[in-house]
Length: 198
Image 1 (tube, rainbow, N blue to C red):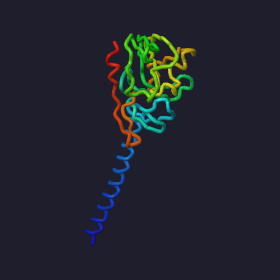
Image 2 (cartoon, rainbow, N blue to C red):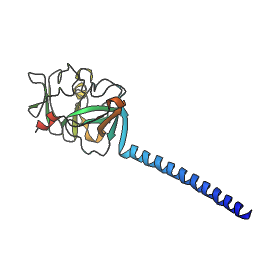
Image 3 (tube, rainbow, N blue to C red):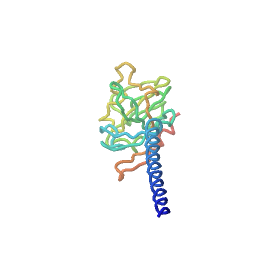
Image 4 (cartoon, helix red, strand yellow):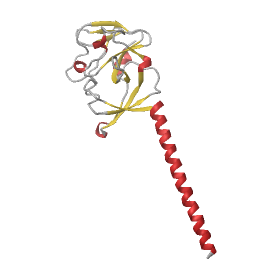
């Protein structure tokens, strides 16, 4: 009889220990997830058509917050022009670049090199609309949407303080994968046309 009671006591202690361990692991897992969300990986949803067809309304992307300085061709999430809201666009020019619109084929020109953007531009869109020529200041970016006729990007903010440029410090991170919907899952890479820009 005494042995049975002792065995029951041991079993109860094991149950308590197992429960505590489970709770501890759960709390630890949530803590790690929150740290990753805050400092490493962020999830963002797409609220507008400005990046179609690369990103459609309600698509979701993971953003790497530790990706380093943005480069030409990267898709980045940043604090937007007027409101500071999270905004997503493509980097067309970085500090020191001369960005112009457009050549005779309606292509954006970066440092004298026309961009062949057919692989990601919205079907039927040209590289740009109204003519412009800007030199990107150091530490700044020139950003444009992939659906140029539906994007309020750097071009739309040229007459405001800051001249349409975004500070590199306002970039939250680089979009690395479109994970939702699952049927449109896609790992982003830099379009080849940007390799030709010097």
